[in-house]
Image (cartoon, rainbow, N blue to C red; front, side, top):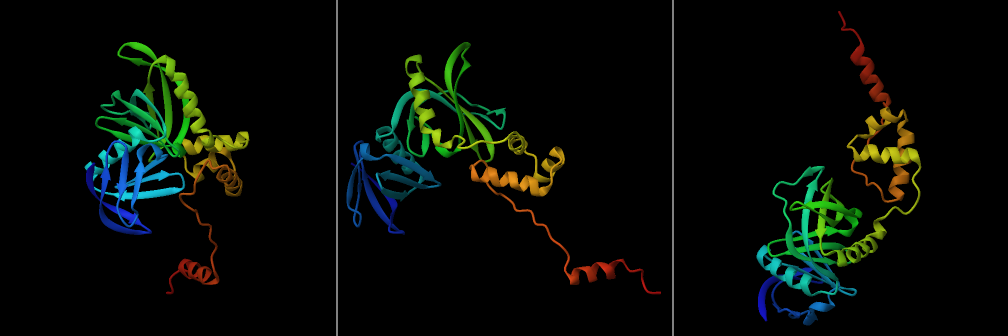
Length: 265
């Protein structure tokens, strides 16, 4: 069993410890003192240099250097209880409508967990959060001069829509597509959006600001705000900036009045 120096979160306090790791289990020392089978881990998340893994309702947080974190993460992702499939992937292939420079197919595994779709290769470990997936579809893509069926995943990445692809044998492609569709169904629209709200959503997607949307659709701020409220309730948007509307106080009126007076001769 390898020994890895880490910082271990114990009831909100980070303690410097050494954990044990092999292909089948992780040993967390005192004061946790737990031997955790890798196959019992059902979710993995990474936030900067912190790895969070779960076994049922129990969550464990570990922080360590990038190289050690990558080793730990790979062992967990290749042995945990999530859906796993050996395949080729390209992630991301497109970002903001532009092909990613040097994007290439990588051979590895796809692991689908509660909160993320993980791509694991010899050199990379990439996660697409389930909450950021905007669409899953089967499509055809040219692979080395031959049209191949692939699974296409559109997802939001730092404000831009990115696209990733998965390539695997036809016999398992539909199974993968069905599993991914089911895993991301909670991100689907739960409710109806009227045509005007749909137009607003498209204009927001195109990068247009609120003032421009009001002018484009000939709608008042109050009307657009009402549409935003509906979209917020459906989980389609989030507030990034609140625009203020103000009116002058008596002091403000006095300031303006004094400012426009002609100079006293």
